[in-house]
Image (cartoon, rainbow, N blue to C red; front, side, top):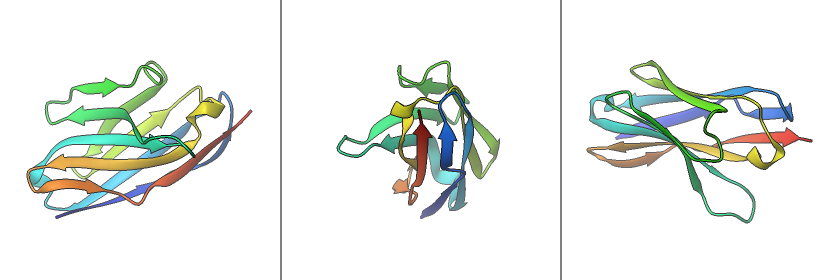
Length: 114
């Protein structure tokens, strides 16, 4: 099992920045890919960014150049969000794709005011 806890969400004005953190506990050795998803009201959950074991990062077109995913440690992954827009408002979820299955955090709210 892998337990995930997100933190760092909040309210920010358009153009501002936030940093989300995902802390993992449990069978860390099993993690293959770290991912950040988001879900806005009335919309499907969408993949925002991913980070593989090799360090390769991928981004959705909507956030490329503004968001950056990185590993702060073996157990913590960061999503740095810059130049935030009102359309970035959503609940952001950390997810890991592991050899033991797929695990999710509880989510953290990000609200960007115009």
